[in-house]
Image (tube, rainbow, N blue to C red; front, side, top):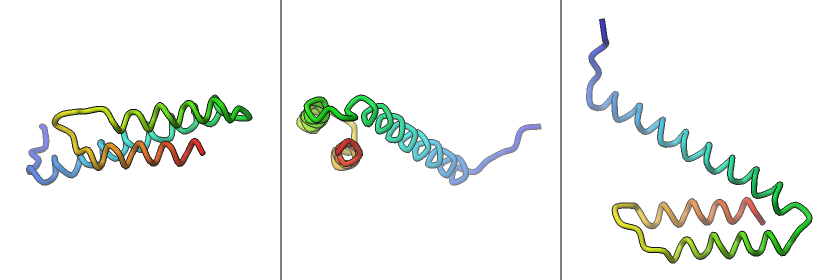
Length: 79
């Protein structure tokens, strides 16, 4: 028999999933970026410039401040 969940329980579960996905993506990208840029400042600089350029792109239906915050976090991980 399936368990009936409240809207609050479902929302809480979705929040955990979203946080998990965000953390995984940040950590995976950081690991790849560190490996790709290790010992190569030119590649690191190019990657940072590409990330900065992402902040200038227009997107609809997203929280732009949150999006930019994640990009800033990735830039900090590359540096």
